[in-house]
View 1: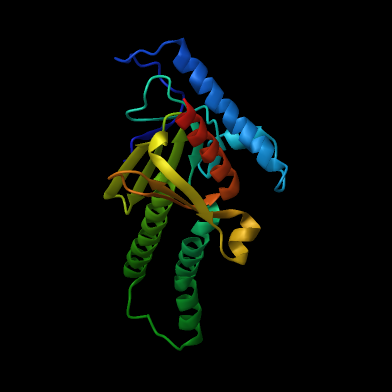
View 2: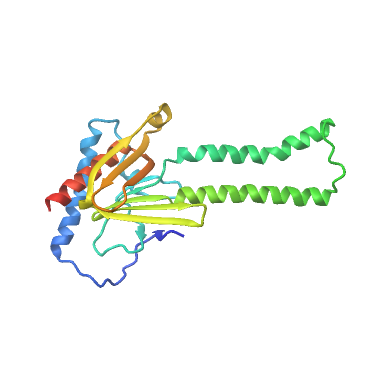
Length: 238
């Protein structure tokens, strides 16, 4: 599973120590997130109060300054400023598919009662086993798709950008780059659905051999862009 944890952060001993200037630096970056959000709210529809956006739960896709999130290799003094997943709307296609698959036995039963299809050659025990196995596959399909969405996480911290790609349980890829390595940031929001639900793709171009980053279908892309730009500007001026 990806090395990211939702829960109270543990006070683990660290080998590296930072002076008070590091603490002030992180406080300043958190203020940039707040300031960037306030400034951006003047130009776009105001989001609801911040308490809603700093709470992580099983269906959370956008969190500012999450309090109960940690991940492996997190540095001492490093603060998570943005916690991002794909907007929950992206799950609707596979949810609809799972519902339709769940209705297939009901349709077959109705057709059988009409006499079009005859399954009387199957004993009740066989029918029960087939039905249980069929719904077990549907539950597995739902489980895999939910975990794929849940563990595909993008993090913006006070020091770097972290992107965790997780697919079909067996594939995991974690990329990270320092804020000072990010050269260009942009976002794409195409289509009526994306405009209505306010989500889009963030593209980050990095310097050197580091791979470019993509945050796909994340909520409030304009706000995310503003926050990252503020952090990059502060990091380059430090």
